[in-house]
Image (cartoon, rainbow, N blue to C red; front, side, top):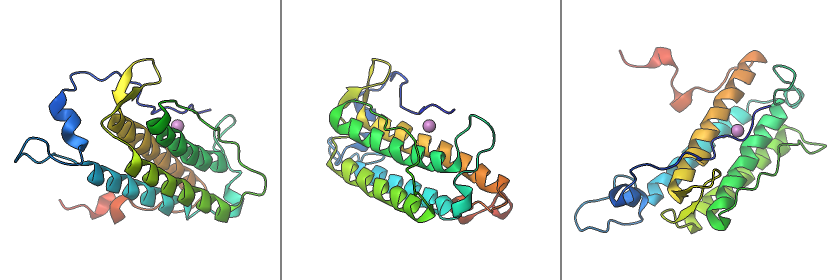
Length: 191
Ligand code: NI
């Protein structure tokens, strides 16, 4: 079984004031704009969610119980894990605590309710990010601390990308075509 990794447990090293301003809502030192501001980061998470939705959208009801092997996530558990990890990471920005609700698939779940779960947790995440102070220092899972924006990158972007890729491989193994990332296949790239 896959554990909820991607919790941004790595201790931050050498993160100085200049870096922590990268997600500031405004530039604080005159004419030097931040490389990436909070609004851009939040918009990026919205894009990550949209690309995950494209993969979830391809699932059929009969796919939800499929699993690649014993002890692995079923498709339904995998999607539930993605959704509940969003909630966990977002809530941790407010509470400082990581609390994972698990990935048990509710009885009666079908692809429509699964899509709704993904859409609902996406909205909740974006609302939480808009309200959060992304420069605040929060506890990491390993007892250290980290700036909140690091959890956005690790917990809400890298973790979800990791599992979306896994879901795309599930789709492939079930005989379905996974969505291309950014609308392009490797064969379409300029050479
Ligand atoms: Ni995980």
